[in-house]
Length: 246
Length: 303
Image 1 (cartoon, helix red, strand yellow):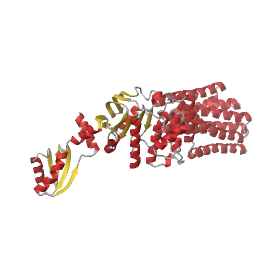
Image 2 (image 1 turned 135 degrees about the vertical axis):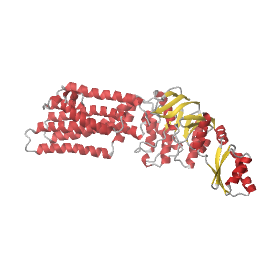
Image 3 (image 1 turned 180 degrees about the vertical axis):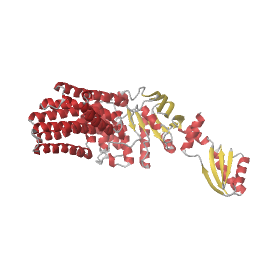
């Protein structure tokens, strides 16, 4: 008797289970509040008499607050919890000791994190762009940059959730120090930080100059974000296969 | 069906399981050992959840951690209490069925829940269940794929006597169908009711293996230590040594600690002896009748 589960089926089962596990009231409320801060900042930009070019300023706010803080933090919270929470609370065994291939489980977890993070971030940053007076190109740029940022960060954080305990703390340190601080100061570090490529998408598509840290062309930025996600998921599948399960 | 050859597992400097070898076929095999003896680590190695540091552990000839197909032929009820607390029992067991590639998910879920005596239509999330009910949910999830090998880590913990009886009968029924069941316990009497094959694990080592009766005899035949409370301990100690009922004695205030080789003979002799000597017998307390000391004896005997 063949007791294996097909890859597609395994992805769908894992995705369905983990969306449910990830959507806790506390998490969603906390992250909606973070999104609301973004929208409030946009309202401030629109209402300020000192802002000369609101369409440019709101893109800078989305870059400085949205792509540096909201996108990575929302991705971190959901993606690191997708398999990390199961590992820590002892329920991972119910997905691990099954005739399902590891990559399917990891992919299902990744898609579950995206299912929650993408709408949450797109909604708040998209609303902020619209409310703050961004042009149509600026709104599209915001949505695209957000989507690819979440895509890449979520891959990294699914892996992180399987690598270490207390992944939220280490993830925050990575977001704030590496992505937020070092990547902004140093161009070489910027090239190995997701932030630079998400910013490049925002700058290129909105045609707003965001400086040298956002200098990758659009196709490079898209490819890098996708490669980061795919590479991280492949590494996560290997890690899941070798992990000690409680 | 299940084989361990020189299986050893270390966590840093701590050796959880040391050089354990055995072969198990169909039927119920009880893994008996005190808490912390290494039973759960052994089970985790069997299921591939952790790889042995040395040696091999195989299920149906293969390593469960590396072989996807074998994972579909194992049912595990882990010791830890963690479940997906927001799911109902039905959703939890159906999830287990789906993740095992079971075709008739609804029918098999219903059957598994009924076998463990849980209400299929109970909408309550398992997070609101009692310990015993959660235990039965885990058992139903382990049964739902009709596995060839069932690994049940302390499955009777938290169950009431009626449910225990029901589960033991269920284990017997599965064994009769040719399944291989490994059931761990730290309760000797529980093991007696589970079946005849027993592996005793103590301090990470296989202390004894075989049929329950021979093991029980072995445990009864070991030297015992008993405290006998009396008003004249010195006189009683002398009489016990003189009549060959004691291997050694320690006289205390109001009591004698007696080392005994034949506990049955000692039990027959002690009361008539105190009557004969005109002593008061205040108490008779076995000092090493807990499982820990039984295991310790078995380990020492093995060295």
